[in-house]
Length: 447
Image (cartoon, one colour):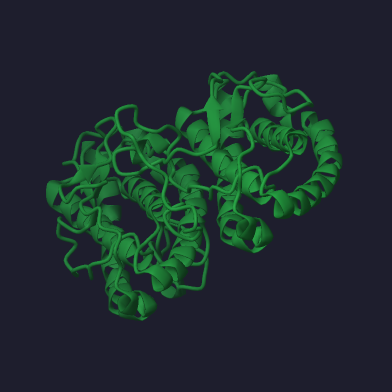
């Protein structure tokens, strides 16, 4: 459980750090119901402050080119904007409950700390917009960025000029994993009066990465953003689950196999499509038997477990999360990005009966995280071609997305009745014992 004391996301000390100050997941149903309307004054003020922040950021750009360092006064002004945008993001996306102030002052429930200005390379400053594009693309997929667009439009970090394009970034939208998590959390909060822990943790992680990307773009720091889920470990909780991902792969990626990765995966995609047909009939059979006995037969469980593992191996290879060419059998322990699935256990019959409907929220979030994994693969492809290796942060983020989807399809395929966990971390703390929440709360803390 989180304490009321600040908990900084700082596995390593980074110049831009997300801080979660309150572990209370309780949410006021009334304010949640009208959250977007309550945030309208913040959207207006965020737009005005954003316009000024981008003008000041241009001056910062000139200062970095001339002197190699941003003036502290201007740095603090832009940093205040990033902090305020983080507060608004956290409030609108339901990661925080208190109504934020309009000054961007430190102390909000989900906050960001930004170090004082340091010297920056002039060449990196000159090409900052181009260098930031990969981080902005990933921010858009994570959904933690904001602009002054209407809430129904897609979210992204933008660098826009005057006229009709004169907007700030950081606008709440329907796109991205954080927005999907907030959409699901909205219903859960109205039903239970509290935010699901996993959804809150995922949203906070996305907002934190967006703050890193914004600070880098606006020349507050020369440190490139990292997407490593380790940054979420101080505040995120990963409960014990029958479906676990195991990462034993290294980061080396031979350039030749990277270049032709899409062609190399074609035989696997064909075999996966054929196996999917058989898996469908196996799930239908398991559903009927499970309704009668409350258990899935071990033979069918092994078949479907191998299918989930194999699908994870194939997607990991396609998106460069995994290094080498996978086998065709889905054998446990045969790949560097593997899935461990516990043996069959007794399941609730009513959950088996309603399994498809219960899985819909997880499928919605899984689709959003699948888009994040696609961006990870796209960015990793270019990086691996240039450097011959996969960035660790991207690899780990991709593995986290694959873990959630493996848990989702294991749940849908009746391999377990434990609901998937959206927490963006790969490992549970070794010194902390976390109990799994009530399994009947399928839209609650299990997320």
